[in-house]
Length: 231
Image 1 (cartoon, one colour):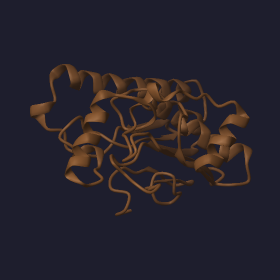
Image 2 (tube, rainbow, N blue to C red):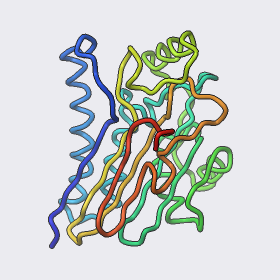
Image 3 (cartoon, rainbow, N blue to C red):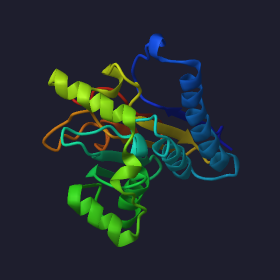
């Protein structure tokens, strides 16, 4: 039996101590701990690495402080456009979605691409149509609205630039992800993001591109965070 392992991240970036109150820091820790708990419960009970990373990332997507799912940043047009990917190191199969809107858990839609299509990456309207066909859970725009993300957008617009989440003066932290090894020694990775604040023209970063923002094989599993253009 292989040694089970799970690692998660809530995004790269420097958190200014002047803006991180004890209460806010506790909220971040709670979100990360919930993610670890949900992913580890699967591994502990003999579940697969793929199930574990999906569960861990779903929890982070549901937490409004992280830049993924519910907490995704706003585009220049004032909406959320989300990306996610997941990869099974045992089979080298991967699934990804980009430029999706209204999807509660983009990482789960990415897994459906992996398991239920012959494709790797679906984007935009087509990806949303695929989600509708499968009955994937969706939410209205109000679900994704968070005040601190809206303030970030106003700041970025006034500055005239697209901004990484952690480069903003307001609440930091960005892309989320998880990697895992299960009891059979199989590896998996999953990554999800709302992208960059004030992004335009359908910008897509590294997260949904297999081998850039997310990768797993029989020897390693990687979930990246940072400036997608550099990747």
